[in-house]
Figure 1 (cartoon, protein in one colour):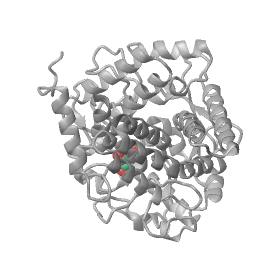
Figure 2 (tube, helix red, strand yellow; figure 1 turned 90 degrees about the horizontal axis):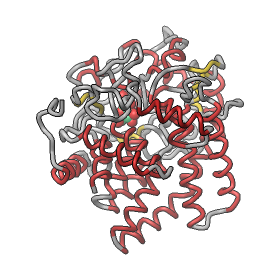
Figure 3 (spheres, protein in one colour; figure 1 turned 90 degrees about the vertical axis):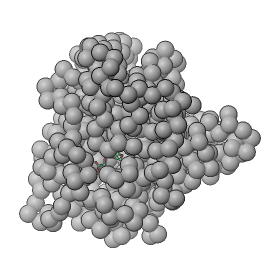
Length: 447
Ligand code: 9YW
């Protein structure tokens, strides 16, 4: 039924409300990821937020990315959280203890892991929007793109140098939080091998107090593991080589690998335009090609779905999640595999499921055992992922598909709640409301 949700805003009103969310979440220094649940800057959130901001104020969009990259570690890592002074979120900077890390920045407090590399994509988008918006914005954005290029390159280089271990070619994560899809069933098997030690310092979660229903969040058991991995890294002094060698969790993330391929393409294009070093441009072309090859090589021989790989055991991880469609984003898979994935995406196992409020991919297939309509990355639909699909489809020249994704994303969010994630059948907003990146992608879609 079309009226599962009573409220549907018109596009101009929805855009105005989205703009207000970004303004309200602005502390004057950063736009927090969400008003109460996430009172800090998150790495990939900041990238999406800057895209939305560019629709309102190009200078403000640039400032947001500058703030994130001011917290870049000396080795090139862009940290997953840049902390504000608010202490309403756990784990905060003290628990991370990154001030002890050799490579960490001195003037700001950050976490000690990373998140998906979508920043070059954001810079490209901000630049494109600025060029259309007027000569002053264009000049500012071009200056900014030149200025940030070397930092983006260093960030990509870090992922290759430290996070592409072994021969799979997949970019590896050392914590589920690095994937951005924290408790996705993608990580269930590798997390089974994470055994929190007796030395895990006690802690009290704050997230479950903010969210009305704790069942929309990861479980305590999951949190013990999340915290234990931090403990391991802290003990290793955030030395990447030691962590990649010893941590209890090391997984080749196929979705990040696909995003990395696309980000390298984009960074290469920007570098060509702005006359960057040919050797660095050659690196980017090489990294993109290798990442694509790794994504294609991960595809299951029957389903075609791309797979993560547990790099501790060497086992492929077969789960029916949205990450399986990674080759549709970055390309590079054989034509027959791509066709299979496209028809799977359209089928009733995914976007064509008859009961979906909006025909966009849920985080997990509704047909998969264990699919949970309300729990975080175990079933709900996430607007930012819809944005990534529509952006990537557009780039691939699939304009009609890109438009359908975007329209579906608008349908998902037209209740004006700017939910963090959505119940796929009822469209109920879950987790936080007024989530900044949701507002940002809606703005990008509507402006
Ligand atoms: C947490 C901020 C972040 C996102 C992640 C998402 C969630 C934080 O929120 O993680 O404490 O659960 O999983 O992708 O960046 O929006």
